[in-house]
Length: 159
Image (cartoon, rainbow, N blue to C red; front, side, top):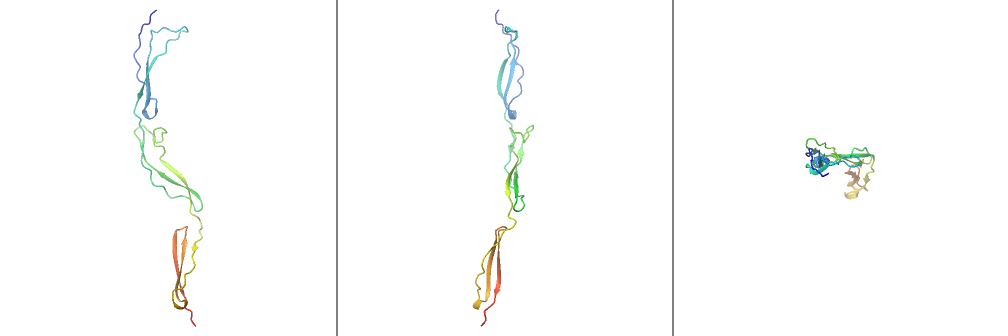
């Protein structure tokens, strides 16, 4: 008995199987004239495969500035920044394959010290004659990052 090709028409192309609207798709056709095997099974369909679709993804915007640290003094907190994400219709910004790979970032930060000893300098010598005049000292507070200059009047030494 000879082989008589009587292939059916190809089916419609199936959906793209990959992420973000791209990947591969298949279609098939049967050969009903192909004789069954010894177990009565018919031949599997002929399958055709092709690449399909353009990858459709979201576009992340640049990151914004970091927030201020939300920690209390001597504590641990977080700083955060975020960005916008422009997505075509039908694509979710949180999609692992097609989205923006996160629109918020957080990092650990540490609060300023609750108490910080000021660095107190020595008084300068009095600048007037006979021990009189004015003397000064500089006090630096590293917690507040400030510097304060104190002055006081010197008493003249009288004989």
